[in-house]
Length: 496
Image: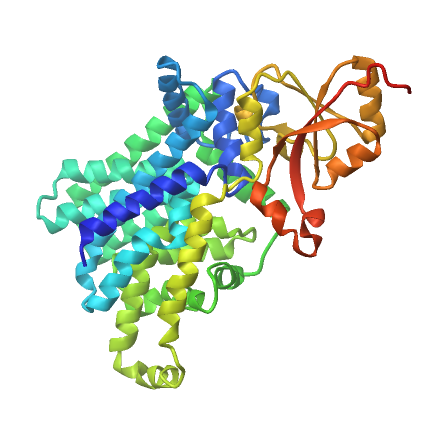
């Protein structure tokens, strides 16, 4: 197994995903980071932000980082939201790759079987949803990655016997940064602190250094929040008070305690996902004194107890998947009292599972590497690259995903978007303007409908690969939402 070649190939895969997996997994990734950034850049009005802004409950670290990156792009006259977003995804990817290399360096020695080692290495760089997550500039991705970099710094310093108060301070600073990025990471930090205190019995002076680092990061976060919100505030308290104490978060839906088990099993592709569920929920049973158990257990427990649940809330743990699965399998195969269970599983023809897993993984990896995370992103780029000043649309507002808040970050200044209820109203606009207009709709059959209304048109953009049009089996395109932009020619000289 040539580790360097695997890492290099992993870098290539992550770079490809960084370029083409444009957009976001969840709206918070955009509206509570990039739109917050756009507000500081003067692109988004404060009243056009998500409601969390008024309550000052979102940390400012990632908007501040994005702001700094964009300012550098502007300094070199390279200001373009799509280039800047690619850079941020690349930054996320390289941070994720560094985290995986560090985790493998620290924990691979605990895996004795060569086959399991190979699995851990390949999963670290090529597991489809890990690659997808690594390229997301989201709080879930960054908080988990930064946390494990901080943990890795401590474990590396301890293994090399170079642990000092200063190194503990740096570890605390990195772990504190993870908390500043996403407050829920505090449960992982708490588990790690208890492990240091109760299991490792770390020296008091070292623990003090770690706590000082945590406090320094927390204070830095307060300063960033002061810069961003324009007033002193404690975003961590605001978040806790509003979402947990006042229980506003439950207004977004409540799931049963076993939701994370079922959704992980479904989303991570069964039957392979069964191993993932078993590994994370039974790791404490197999390794009760392991540092990873003390990190995973409180994080999963608290999230299980909170009523509102989303699978993305567990993403900070995702970087552990390769190591935890390998450790779990190793213990499962070694433990004598589990011999009967192993005998039961041997009755089934499992040999096809590894081959089918990697085949499915390759397919999904190809999809996530080349398919944009946001289906509208190429439309935004099309509009941004041209100096259009007015767009008429029918149906959903093209720059809105949640309520009335708009994606100003990708919208060129000076572009007006105007809704028309139907093609009859569009005709009125054409007669009144006396010139060509830019029009957008979401039906693949829109061209036919325009022709039926006697409206001459030219297709400028369609949010669909041209080759797919030739594979309209069972007329599936008629049932598909396809964003199309047309130039509707003037009705000047035509009878009403």
